[in-house]
Structures are given as C-alpha cells and as structure tokens.
Length: 462
Image (cartoon, rainbow, N blue to C red; front, side, top):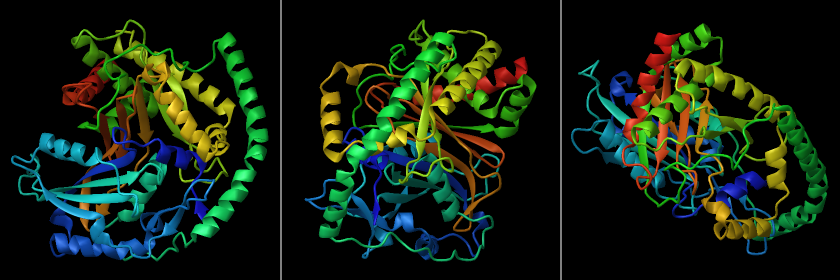
C-alpha cells in the first residue's frame, strides 16, 4: 500500500476551514483548435478517456481507527468523473477580474476527503482575446490537495493531462494505488510506528550537523536569510476563509534578456520582479518596512531524494533587498544573496525537511499543531511571502484539443504568511499567479499589474 509520507500527512493535518491546502492552476484555452469544435460533452468524454493513465487522480484516502501511522492512498473503486468535473459560466463581461473572482471562491473551499482529492472546473463565457476577437475562449480551474502533489508533481500531472498536439492518441493505462483493508492499514501502521525511534536516530545527528553548519555560515557571513527576522507587513496576519487572486503574464524573452544582460539567472530576475513589485506596492501605501522583506522559496528535490512521498520539498529563505531603491542594484544584490542561500541549502542536504517530517508521529503532529495555535509564534512573521518558480513546458500544449494560451499556478497561504506568488513558464510566456486574503489587501490586482512595469524598468536599465 502507498502510505502518506510525514510531509504529505503534515499538509493534510494542517488544513482547516481558513487554510485550505490546495495546489491550483488556471488555464486559459483557445477552443478553435479542438477537432470538430468544442462542446462540454466532448470535453468531458475526452477527459474521462484519460483517467486510466492518471493513477494520482483515481486515488483516495483510506484510514483505520486503530492506525497509529499516517493514512494511505487506495484506488477509488467507485470513481465517477462527474463528481470532480464541474461546469460554470462567467458573469458579464467575462474579463480577468470576473475570472479571478470566481476562481478565488473555488480555491477557498476545502476538498471532499471521501473521494479523490481534486476538482476541475470548466469556466465558460470568457470575453474574446483583444488580439483575436473571433476566438472562442474558456478557462479551466484545476484544484488538487497539496498532500497529493507538490509544485513539480503538479506540473507533471498537467503534462499528463495535456498533449503536444490537438489530436494526440490516448495514453496507455497506468496501474493504480491498489486496495487496503482497515486491519491491513492498522497492522502496517503499527510496524511503521515502532520504527519511529530508528528514524529519530538518523534525524537527530543530521539536525545537529545542520545547526553546526548554519552557525558556521552565519559567523562567516555566508548563511541564507534567517527565519523570524522578517519585518511585519499587511500580509503577515491571521487569515479568514476568503481568498483573492490576481494574475500577470510576461514575455519570457524579456526576462531572459535581463538575465543575459545582467549576468544573472532567470530565477534571480523572477525574485527581483517580485521584490520590485512588492516594494512599490507597499511604498505607495506607506507600508514599506525599513528592513528588507524575506521570502521563503520552496525547492524540489525530485530526482535528488530516494525518500517516499508525493511531496519532495526543501526550501530556503531569501533576502528580497526591498530596502534598495535602485532596481538594477536590487537585482544584483538578490542574485548574490540567492547564490549564498542556494549554497547553504545545498550544504544542508536535500532530505532534511522530508526526514524531519518522516520522524514525527501522527499524535506528535496533532500536539505540535495545537501548541502552535496557542503560542505567539502563530502571529510572528517567520517570512513575508512565499515565492515559487516552476519550470513549465517549453512548447505549446493542448487540453482535450484546445490550445493553452496561459497557465497560472496558485499555491496555498497560511496564518502569518498571507501572500503566495507562484510563477510558471509556458512556451514564450511567464505566468504569474498571486493569491492572498481580501482582509489583508484590498486590491491584489494593483500588485499584479506592477510586474510588467518592473520588468520594463529592468529592461531599460540593462
């Protein structure tokens, strides 16, 4: 049986009505490429034919009252696509604001745990593209629980859902997660529970080594930015269950031009765009802290780790240098601090976060979450923003025959960390998805629209 790893389970246990832990994407489609023309019925049929090749979307959670370990994934024997695929229409005029508003409502609701943890919403009624007024557009909102996917596996899942041409042949079937009985889950869970002391014997030395390495780097001035050193911003507050979404799309060639001219990496430019947009946004509201903002940047360890679980993540804390006024100087400072953070993170090893989570028992997770909710740490700014940069497909993709024109990723937010900026490349575009809580910021679009202006300023300066 496939049991949730400690990191997978921690994301499951951490969810609440105010913190739904969903990984989402909004895709804008041009249906003029669909062979025979688009209908919802044909779209549903095409999607249904792909389910046999997508075991992640057919697996649901199973548990036992006697289980001392984490739940397991099992094949949903009664899988029904109609419980996951929904169809709605946008109110007039069907622009980006209406699309973001309806997607914000969708992302704010937790998924039903009695079935596979995903939904797809077909959103019709988008206004025509200004550059192609005769085009027929629709959007897809795809929502998957974070316990089932991380950023990289979500991108891989989208790759399996899509095709490089509009009339691609069906994918080969893939075996699913299998089945498990309550007694089997409990028995295997007992064995895993009894091995936790052995897990701790591995993690404690690794953690001690990490502390020593971090102290040494801090003394030498080569450490990444430290947690709990972030200044307070409007985003660092308690959340409600509501969400707000804003989107931006940039020319990837322009981003690469800045990268080449300034001798930095694409990720450095992405971080600088986020930093510049945030700096100007907060400055215009007289809310820019004197000290620089700190971002936590998740990183994938897929291919670097042999650990179990669907979430294979590490991460680093990065200084956004929002105290520097000049955009070009800020970019160079970010590139330098990003380099130190990557070296520090690499020095700690790819499996630290995964191993730490794996050594925590089910009961210990509950105790830790209860303790965190009643301590001042739950209201302390560990960092200011989550920034994630996911490499997407370099070629055109089609979803059930419709060409994907934009693909905006969206990650979760947490109490005390109420802004997530996730970036994904698609073909010759860079797609930016921002998510926050409307009680923390009244106009997230104002922040999103600053990305293009910030890129233009970097182009002029470079």
